[in-house]
Length: 113
Image (tube, rainbow, N blue to C red; front, side, top):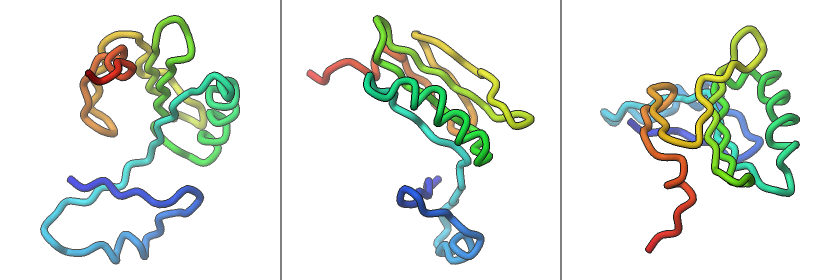
């Protein structure tokens, strides 16, 4: 599968989709975003953007937060105009939508050897 992204602020239109090459690959659009929470913008990342993304109809909103004593991963899914928490953990993450992923939250913050 090939994930298709667009530059920040640019939309992906039906015309763009129809222009994708017919090269035997499977292309998918994923209605989601992953936010890396930073200390200086924690409230903006967790509150303001949450409201903006919900209003924009972004179905999946994942937050990776290493600003506290322990790292956290939160997966949210839009339902009836508001986000429901699918997963909130400092441990193991296993999700199958919109992407199939499995990892340990602390591993995201380990320095490579």
